[in-house]
Amino acid sequence: MTFDNILVPVDFSDTSIRAVQLAVQLARISGGRLTLLHIGVVPYFYATELGMSGPSGPLYSQLTQDIAREQRTRLERIAREEVPEEIPCRTLIRDGFPPEEVVLQVADDAHDCVVMGTHGRTGVKRALLGSVTERVVRECPVPVMVTH
Image 1 (cartoon, rainbow, N blue to C red):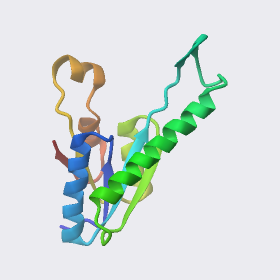
Image 2: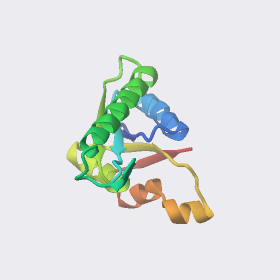
Image 3: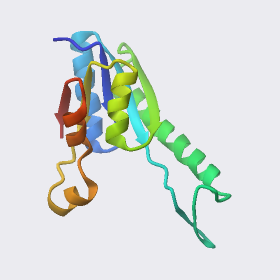
Image 4: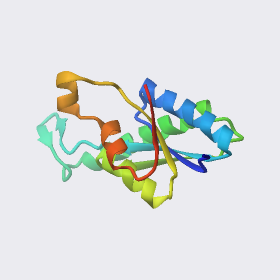
């Protein structure tokens, strides 16, 4: 089985970098291309010197632009450092709830494989933070390869 269009969700953790490295190996074998995807999570509320503010606050627009710029810079750096030039690769940022956005991206661009990392959280951390990877594995219509 070969994969032509590989999606790699990246949250900037070590496990997601390992997923990029694994996806590079898959792309080399299959001649596929990569999409590195980061799901941007923009805070709904943020602290100011006057207290808490929300999306209608005067600094919200600037805050979201700064966050998006930083996310784009980090994602493009990973692509430059981890993906050899001979492997076609693009970077993409979507906003939203990570597991849902990963599954939507698979459908939007006809990806035939997802390669992603897992943090391996257990106990209270897993109960509070959930598992993006587990939900993607359950809901994704294409194969999901998981690394840690």
